[in-house]
Image (cartoon, rainbow, N blue to C red; front, side, top):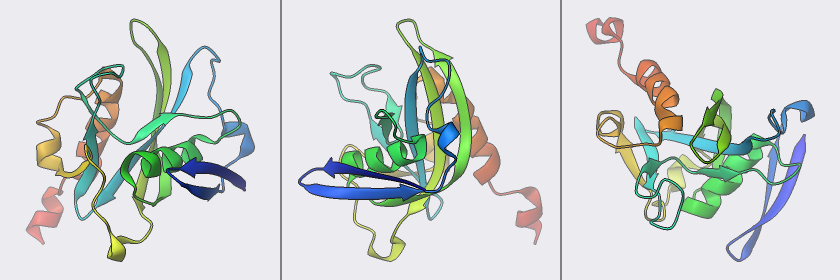
Length: 166
């Protein structure tokens, strides 16, 4: 079990994840390790907009960011989601992982399928994050590094023909 403590706003937050310790950081070492939370709730996905001062400014994004040294990528996704949105989440599974080369950097992206920790007491996410339907997700512009996971989301979450016939 991996326990991490971090400061989120003015509160100390402890996250615990059960993941193999040998999977905490990616290789190659030149890539920046990024943990990303794909938070789903009632057929919607949590999406935000990158700030004007950030890399890939103005594009849509999922909550996430750089992993701290010795932090698992799942714990990173949980921490970053709370820091960026104020929402507490739990990781269900690793959805997708790949390394993407931008012109100025290489990033090792780990996308975790997540759910709200307490869906009944769901607060609204902090702006610029909001809940977006899968249909509306297609209308947004995401970084190149997210294109593979967007296709996976469409394939996994769209209603199947068999389901519509039942």
